[in-house]
Amino acid sequence: MNSLLKKPVHIFIVDDEVEIRSSLERFFSYQGCRVSTYEDAQSYLDQLDQTQVGCLVSDIDMQDMSGLELQRHLNDINCVRPTIFMTGHASINIAIEAMKLGAFDFIEKPFDPDHLLQRIKVAIDSNREKIELINRYYTLTKKEREVFRCVVKGEKNKEMAESLYISMPTIEAHRSRVMRKMQAASLPDLVKMSVILSK
View 1 (tube, rainbow, N blue to C red):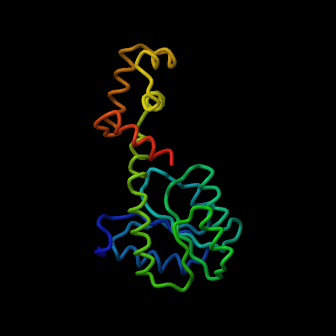
View 2 (view 1 turned 30 degrees about the vertical axis):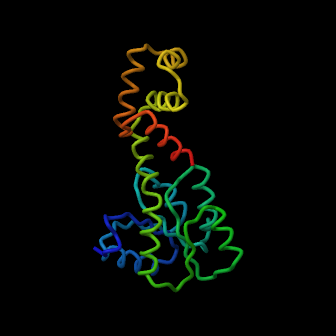
View 3 (view 1 turned 90 degrees about the vertical axis):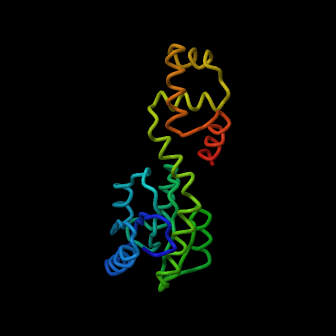
């Protein structure tokens, strides 16, 4: 595995050119990465699993749904997986729009795959903490998420029991499971996690 990557990563490639998909898949697989490829943006959205840590590498110029339109959809569902755009027809306006939509980077074709790998490593490292917290949050049940939100707002057990219509012992059990599943050592720790999740 390439020394740039401390642990295996999952790279999601969206490009309507089969040659680009195949060459990138070969390169990243050789580096020890897990790779998933998609021929269009809708296929990626249909199979999206936000609990998987990784990086999206998407072409911008695609038929039916462009990379920028894909990013808007991802923003609408609050997907935090970092995106790196590729394009063979770069322009300042497109680059600016991509960054405004929250893209991590914008790379013009042809590019050095080693450079792209470096940018993927930085993108994943910068998002890993939040993604890992989201993964933990997804393990909470619906009721545990309600308790989580109440706890970080500073509500007492009695207040939560009244607002959620459940008993005090059940509140205490939910609260204990929330702390364990989120791997929070203290209430302030849980509040910090809530702040990161809300960004």
